[in-house]
Image 1 (cartoon, rainbow, N blue to C red):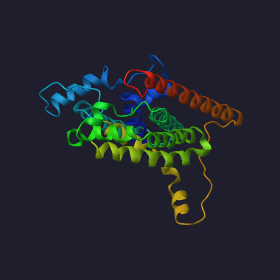
Image 2: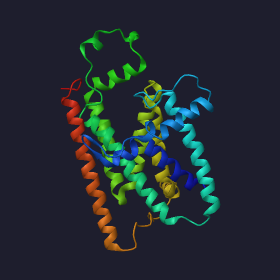
Image 3: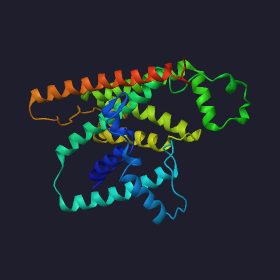
Image 4: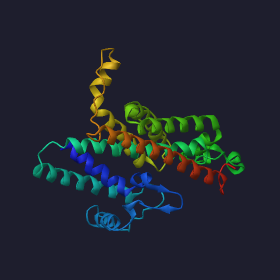
Length: 284
């Protein structure tokens, strides 16, 4: 039941947000845009806001992922996922071992893409540009918490680049199956840092960063006993994640495809970050 819920919920949430589209990123072309603000998810969200939560005014998606629109959408995605997972478990009570393998692959690649996205935006410091003159002469007390976050990260280039390198490294490790557990552990630490900053400074990416924070523990769950043994100083068994295919040749081709995808994602997000860096309002 819990596994099926995870498959349904992460699938729906990834389609509703940037997560799924991050795997099919092409500069200047939206192959898979976030469907949360499009038909039919938008209409379902507006209906739930009006008839379930009693919101009188129309809900607006906005640029932030923490608006009332997105919280209402997350609520009905949760409810729908529970219902679908319950029905799935009732009609199909067999073990979905192969689905577990492919679900793990999706989570690895989807999380890696987001680590590349946010990581490259800091390695090539386009996300947090250096504070301008207007910001520097403004009294600290006049700045909002989110403005303070933007200022202190942008003011320290080494800090920004270091955190970006940590994100990119986590993505690289996630792409390679043999190092995916290490990558998930590093991604967990990195996203915990990001989530705490978003919450503490009231920045509008709390919802998406929370979901990226819970994806690494899902990936680490099959290795929980091994990791516990390591931290307790006890012997730990070798990892035993089932391969994607039964054929050794097919698995080698799958590994090569994952590496190629990882290289493409890094290059693509680096290209986008360079464009933002040289664009209006960037660091250059």
